[in-house]
Image 1 (spheres, rainbow, N blue to C red):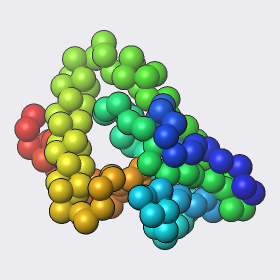
Image 2 (image 1 turned 45 degrees about the vertical axis):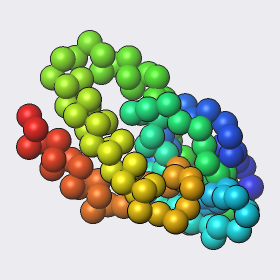
Image 3 (image 1 turned 180 degrees about the horizontal axis):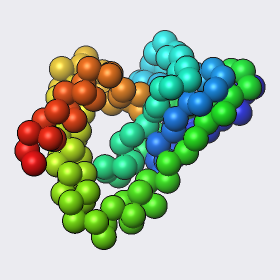
Image 4 (image 1 turned 90 degrees about the horizontal axis):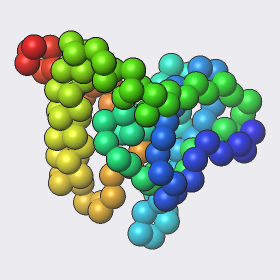
Length: 134
């Protein structure tokens, strides 16, 4: 418990999947009083570096023994680069993801977007729109 996967201001290099245990994400805002978000198994956090340059906007740590899988963003991009069909799909999804992230930022009263952008309905919508653009 207490092991930190990342802290505010670090360059994001991985997407994280919680396999077991219990993690928490604490966003950092201008007044430092945002509530914690709990991240349980079968959830993910910080998809952003797969699609764009990203700096962490909070901290992510274990609050009980946990297993977290890390997907290396650069390795992911390199593996897709030489697969034209997958690359095209990923580029379409990335564009939609970035649009959705910007829309969230514009409708929010907060200045920052946080690492925890993982609303299942939004993800399903982005995947469906990506498929429709094929």
